[in-house]
Image 1: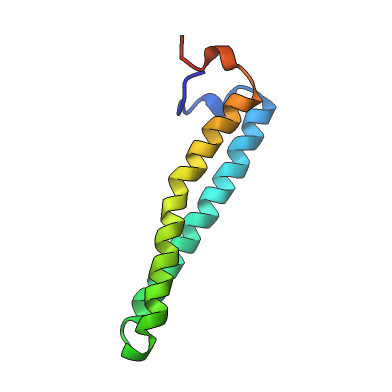
Image 2: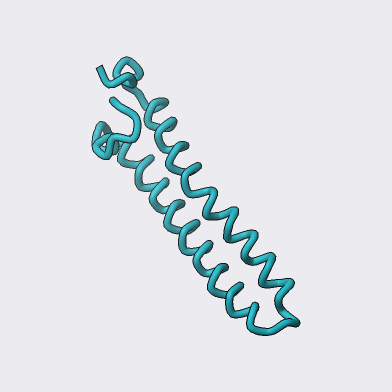
Length: 90
């Protein structure tokens, strides 16, 4: 098993479950971040709501930073699910 191989999710039923949960988390984070950025952008049109818009941008940025973290978590979860001997790809 090599890291970040798109076929890793097919190795076992456990791998399929890990993939499904991580994809759900990834999609929720992605959608939430995009929503916060759109709302933050709208709030920037009015000077009175710029402060709230700035906070929404910050939270959206943190969520966008969470995306690669979810993918990295998924890869470590695959390793924990088995096939340690093949992590190097040999």
